[in-house]
Length: 439
Ligand code: SF4
Image (cartoon, rainbow, N blue to C red):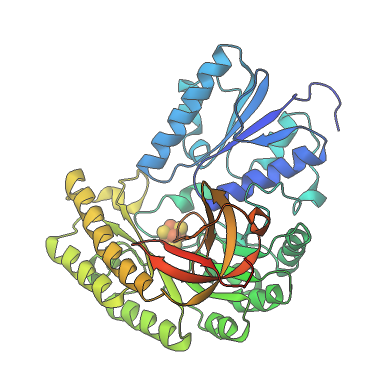
């Protein structure tokens, strides 16, 4: 390690998704191993080096990233920071423009420039520390990024431009990383990738998510293993068998569908049409009884008509997804859809987002009401005021429902799994009490 010019304190800011979070954790792990004082999104102190890990795949995310950079560049200009660096998706996509327009930033780095960032701050990059992460999440759960990039060509998506081709990590490497996380007290492992179901095709010439899951499920410290971002076309059904075989693999699947209109799915280049999508959802539910599905839809794609939108509403009503998110289409340069004329006004897009979310609110309320009176295993994430806040097996952190337990004590339960009797339900959350006597 070079001894000179090491920063007094490094303050990391992470924007965007859990994949960015893992990148921040890996770089922070290297700084921490070198003995540096590293904090995450702490109150800025005079002399801090700030590193902003940006997001840049849709309009709103880009705006948030730019405004965060501008906020800290004023601090840098005023001399309150000793360094300001920007990394991640926005920086990968618009490096030159950013360099020209925000000269207060000391350096811009792309998504794969971890080594360069670390060395720029005077620390030797150590390959053997790749699995050594500084966890930003609460100690009991962590994300495991099993692959980088994406080989699909969805017409609206800028991610392959930013993150490149799909690149699976070898199973042994992931098992080592997972064991290291288990050793730190992680009890819930959340698998992420741009397309989880593609895992292994590049490396092993066959889809290997089921094999990876079999190996991970042997790590008994993991009470829950959760899957995010399964691409629907050519879905590997052996994953469902593994889900049934191993109780520590959550009966939960995040499978973004984007739309149900055949014309739009074709234009979006999703590789799956209306009938096959419907059949897939029925098959998954038939093969894994009790599975909860999370999906994401996009409204306002070029050419989306009232009829298309109504077909989507009807589909949601019939399928009753347990969890659902909706995004407004964002017209992104250098994507295939950028050639198409935008036909849906912003106000209409927003109205469609709101209408779908109102529909989902009703569905979610009905599903939640049916849970009152049951006893569910819940992991306790944190305290908020008079409530301990937890999640069930079918709820992922940040995006899904929560369980609120009114109690002034029992903070020792944070990070623990407890049985909770559900006493009441709201549209998106549940209320409960500890079911064990004495609690
Ligand atoms: S699968 Fe997901 S990440 Fe890949 S191109 Fe399609 S939307 Fe983008």
